[in-house]
Image 1: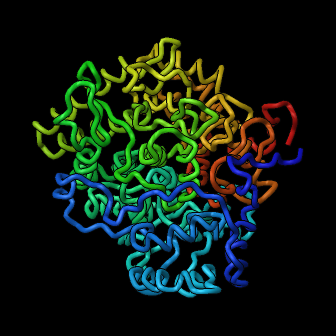
Image 2 (image 1 turned 45 degrees about the vertical axis):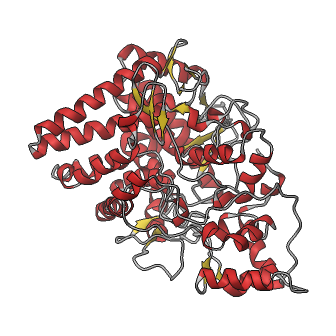
Image 3 (image 1 turned 120 degrees about the horizontal axis):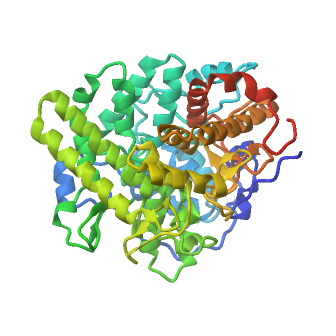
Length: 575
């Protein structure tokens, strides 16, 4: 079967992966005139750091570096508006060769000159990054051997980044996802760490944990990634899972990282103490009955630097104030599900995004785990008051989730705190309460049945049941959600479904590997057994969390490592 062309929200993203990276080099080498693009009216560019409140600034006194859209706002907007690079993250990651203020001043002084060439100016004043090439690894016959050989290619150091680089320094080596993702990412890294442990790379896994503790110490939270333009948001909070992973062999880890665990909790709960019923502040939401839960958020309300023009175009399609749309887009990026019909009023229209109005079931499951981990750490440290406080917080959260994050049709779901009702869409996030072990047996069985009926596909468990062209919708399957599903279902005795999900996903990964000798960021589950599509950029290979989940599934089901390549595909046709 021929691979199906990748679906894209905009025609420009149909470029192949390698072609997308060759384009900027050709542009700069030839100093061609940037192609004209119709653009919405410019959005205001923040000239200060992310909009933290005074209390947050007091807790985190370290000055935040300016993101590139604030360090050289006029030049940045001009380059992105001209679509000088097909992938807008490329210029966000470019390194200024001298002080950004001096480059901005030079640009402002010269831009009106006859014959001024923006592409040549950028080539002169910036160092352009290159993708992380994972295809350079030598050929291996098995998935395991290929993944083991990938770890060194994906490992980076950034103790002392170049001057003016948007990269935030980390004290220890770390593993990047691959492709356009040249920095460490928060929730990706937990699944990567699972694989590192299975590969025997325990020291590197611990170094990853140390890096995330460092980020919390330095910035008060774990940013989306170690870039200045990611500091205004986080990602799904898996730090407590990272601590628990390392604590299996060293229980003292629970006490050692207790300060960072509590500080991350404070970040997510900032402002909660002052909320009246029906109010929300930053990431905390007080529901009308007084229950306290959480949402995704971002402290800035301007276009994302790495998707600058996509965000402008989306906001221009909406009748809402552009700042509201930008905030919801950014909050969607904090969720890791960027983007999905899960956050939209109209699943086919991204500008209807309402992320900040939604209380997500996965986020609150993760925060329940954070609270129980802190409680366990406090008990080990002999702090009875702390143990009791966080245990009661976790119990209250679980009780609120049982009331508000359950759909009458029989599955866990998100909650619209503005409209005061559960969201109807069934998504793979419904399995997070099982992964967190806070579902009742009856609700676990009901949710498992919904997954089997509506989201299980030949290539694995899809994120949603609808195909919108967004990458976190059908027909895509994503490695982290496969592991959450398998682990959660296994915890509740739904072993047949757990194993079936693992088998289907591994067959998908194996098929692509046999054909293309690579692992990719996401996969298509509809029977084609190929890489996934949709979203704002071409399919990326590497790939950190896929590598980790594959090895973890092999550990869970050792027989599948040997039998998947020769099994009959779920569609009934042999590979």
